[in-house]
Image (cartoon, rainbow, N blue to C red):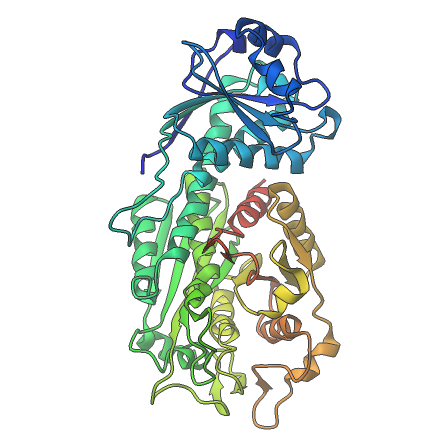
Length: 496
């Protein structure tokens, strides 16, 4: 798979361009105008014929590949819909289409022309970034365990011509940001896609250490089971009792802000495989439980992007990594464990294990006196019933933090929806034999799971992202890298 590179390019008129593939945005209400009319005339009406024949409608997200001439070998028309309706969502769709169609094509080089969209400098910078992100995203193909990888993208070099509304330096900066975000998303996707016999808790720790070596502002430490026992992390450790793979608590500290500034914390569920433990899952689709470390993958992907963006902010990333397996040593339904907070938990279902690793990680991260904490977890199937695969569930004990995540999701088009954690739901967690039980007694499974976590986060502002419906897909099967875009946008906004 080629290493994609993206550069800024000055282009006064698209009719004068020279490219293996010229990407041209087209509006429905003014398909042939100005510079495109000149190019169409030069190419003997190639573009206008495609429109007249109905081969291309210019509706948002549509595309048409046309043959050019000696200088412009191919043209790729990308629909933008109506000019006065080209909002953030339509721009995102445009960028996705550019990335997807270029990655599926045969051209090794392409030039994306954005000037004719008529956007102001701020919007244009955002679109340049989005196009760069989506090109990097679309260029990812999983190859790690394939002896003969297929359908590898041929695209190697892309130029983005943004025009005179934005300076060359700002275009380059937007491209760099977009590539950093795309790389962070793809890092999370790769970790999620790896099989569980490769991506173990220790493998995640190795990946984190490798990240630390690549970035001067990033330091990494890993707590093994002995240290976790000393800290009293009985809840986290109970999940890995049945596995031969040792559990790991991975801590990444990015120091881009002032030395004494309180950090923002992101905490990820890292169950590298989830059989359900003694409460064994049904066999069909159990292979997808390799994706149960999607929260951990998003923490590592976000930290990577933050480091590459060189954000002026302090961030602590914590990954609670374990493998949930059945064996003679495995935790049993009815067992009671003591968490790092001192609170006891009756484990009624060993398949509700994500909250058990997270509660100790959330207690541990409190020692950093974080400004805000966001945990990310493929926590409940119930969130898919509520929100499907479009939005991540957002639960929070602070309105400002919830609004910041909702806004970041809207800007990045990696959206979430706020869910309740009202006190009325807490009674479902009452236990006769411990301070709480790990599952509710009624409906609202995603809510009661969040209510469980809320009991360990009373000392700071906290939000929980349930990404069970968004971190991976069943068809086509694969990790999505969500919610890295939302998290990066949230941290960028917090960094000012």
